[in-house]
Image (cartoon, rainbow, N blue to C red):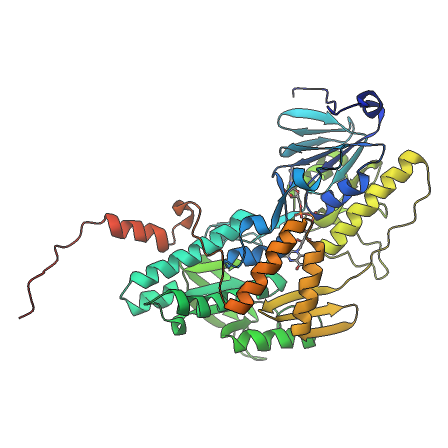
Length: 475
Ligand SMILES: Cc1cc2nc3c(=O)[nH]c(=O)nc-3n(C[C@H](O)[C@H](O)[C@H](O)COP(=O)(O)OP(=O)(O)OC[C@H]3O[C@@H](n4cnc5c(N)ncnc54)[C@H](O)[C@@H]3O)c2cc1C
């Protein structure tokens, strides 16, 4: 392993800064950015490492997937976010190894020493042991996933516009969303809106009546983390918009263009088997912590839970390493009143990132810092234009008021002011005018991965030799 010494190159006083404790933050998501901002202007030098050069607002990914907003509306360059934090340097690269004993992280084939490490590398998607389903049913975790879902969907509509075969059109206009949590419900609601209104307005041959959105979940209700009354409100709204709910449904297999599902029958009866032929299949069902959790466990002997999350101490450190903190989706924090781990959500990630940064400062500067206390702000899901459900510390709201609260909360959490304005304008425009501004087909056609829809067959169609047209007048 090549070893290099890293010094932050900054305007004076470089000497003073070189003597400051070095805090390395891995991951510029909700937790990492909050930690970096909390350390801005303090007597520590901070290096924020991320494999992407932007911070992604994952809760709005479904809006990118459904063409409501574009990529740059939900992602902000890290350099922009940390522009004014002169003691923070952003470095692009993927951390591939950790050396807790030597206090080093490895990225871009270099080792960097730290005095304090904050691991905030988040989570990815899990297919519960069925990785072979991934190419058929993209998850929704990063921007490219949302792009891919949108590309598959719109390409299928484009092909449907050109095919005279009714059966094929039905296939092309069918979408299966797997997972009835907030992301699945939000995506299904938004796609139903898109496949009804946008098709009616922008396509000539495609019949919106042939569009089919199926939401599959193994539970007996959607949004199981919320109060049953809110699940019922969300289900009622989705059904009223034509979304089919397959509750009690377990996915058995996903093949190109086909999903096999076993659906629980009434008490005592056999499960029913369903095979749905669909051009677009999306996966929002499983989450797995970043592989850095497992790597840290191998290198330090700390424990990870079944989801790969690092089990942390009350101050988010790991046993024997008070200088290593793990926060956000990557950690399992159970030092709560009911002993249940904090949920993998943006709110806890932000609070953890801020607290850990202040705790490091307290140690560096020698002041007392109180214990971490999580403030539960509740949870929300937006199911359609002007319709959201919100569970806010016992206050349960559904409908327009829910949407208003959802909008305020999401704009408040959005880190960049410019994105707040753009999003607000796009949301209001889409509600007022019924238009979506980002219905673009981008990406690589070969990402279709065996599903013969859209651009691939579109290209095949235009390249295939054509039968000579008979232009003679009909007899
Ligand atoms: C589709 C979707 C919808 C969601 N909706 C909601 C919602 O409505 N409300 C809510 O509260 N929460 C929601 N969440 C959950 C929320 O987004 C996460 O809990 C939150 O992003 C976790 O923050 P984090 O900082 O731990 O990780 P992340 O925000 O995921 O950030 C991790 C960062 O680490 C970087 N990284 C990863 N590995 C490495 C590496 N090896 N080297 C360098 N960098 C690395 C990544 O590039 C990324 O920037 C949603 C999540 C998804 C996917």
